[in-house]
Length: 256
Image 1 (tube, rainbow, N blue to C red):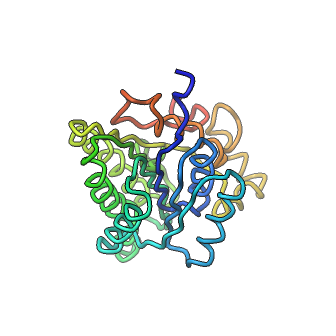
Image 2: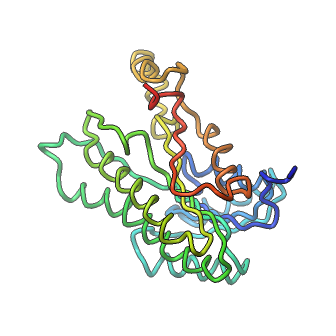
Image 3: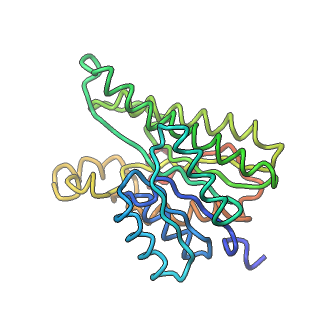
């Protein structure tokens, strides 16, 4: 029982694994014993450098791979290459996402379609191809990235973002049912605002930071590291009977 939360010997594929949230999750998987594949849309120089950094910090075996989540053939190549290197994929974390804020009545459909292509189609493509690899062994854990905005409406130009995260919520639940016979668990993380390079301007603006803090009972903004423990839990044997759920990592925001 003492090793319930360990990931030793498991292979974790983190898509979006070099991003603001994904980089923390890649490092977290490695710290708990997993071999980590860092997949992202970034160039290979940057990906190799980050994978090497994770390996140096943790001693874990790592691999870097470029991927366009909206391209199904590209995703198939990623899965094939990971299986050729490691033989299995035990954990899939879909840590990628895109947000383009636009007023609803002026939302350009090209931007809307891009949002859904990345945040929804990309998640489904990844789940489809990785789950097909997992089902042969009848085990696996898939972790999607949802948001508190997947269950609660929010203004400020977030119609597309909220829509995509609502879709991720239902994809997660539906896949959990479909994949349960293969012992593949499908869950999601639902953070409130997380401070990354893309949102650091909020933390640096005292008035804006206080506005967001006021929505969170714990009175602070989230950090990428706040998602590591919940992700490790969902990836581990400790969550063996946990599927179809979203863990909201939100400082109590959805409790009120």
